[in-house]
Length: 303
Ligand code: HSE
Image 1: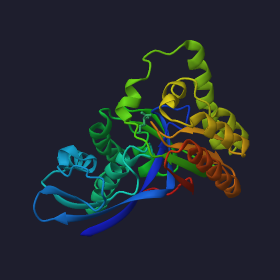
Image 2: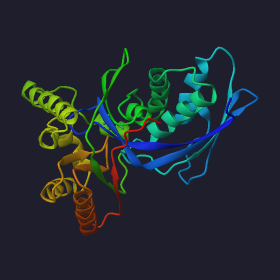
Image 3: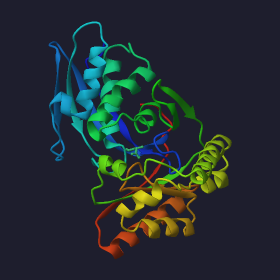
């Protein structure tokens, strides 16, 4: 049995514009790094090597909470020592909490000889998301663990589907402002107009079909959100400019990454993806907000 493991746990884009809480995809970059060792004594010890000052008590830490759930499902006691280096900034909208929670349970499962299924691991990692945002949702965790694009058809009971997808370049801009997931959820309306629901499920079906058929135009047309984006985009300065400019630069489309403030755009080619990054940088330089951009690709490999 292995005694130590190091994993690079990828950032993820939840929602994929139209699929609030049900769609997500994994990115090649950035990744959190987790090193885990089995301990002879029971208990969970967490250290961070970054400067985010995150809690290290297991029940308050997203990775710790996920591990507590996993430990409770073991037949006997277990102990883990965990070193986390976060490269995905908490509160960026890039699945920072999911990367730590998913990485912790996948690492533990590997060290223990894989007693749990991938579905079990998604369930355990959701306990971490609850610590981070107050609700159990799996649209970041699932692509982080399984790779690719994933659909959460249902959380209770858990029903997840891996969707095939053509190669995609992803450009992300992270304006350095804070949008808390819990706040970005609270401002949402609880009811939806039927005409908006019809448009939204047309887009979700179109996006899924476009991904499966490798139809880039259909993917682009379907990246439209008439329910969540109009409310949340108000929290993100420069959003409309980034979106329209990126389309003009040749991006297929995109929108808010998870609950924001990061914005992502999909492109068919590396050149377009870099052009989009330049456009995004220009917007935030003009507005005077610090930002970070990433040009990366969809990550197909599981964690
Ligand atoms: N689906 C979630 C949301 C993702 O948009 O609130 C949060 O990371």
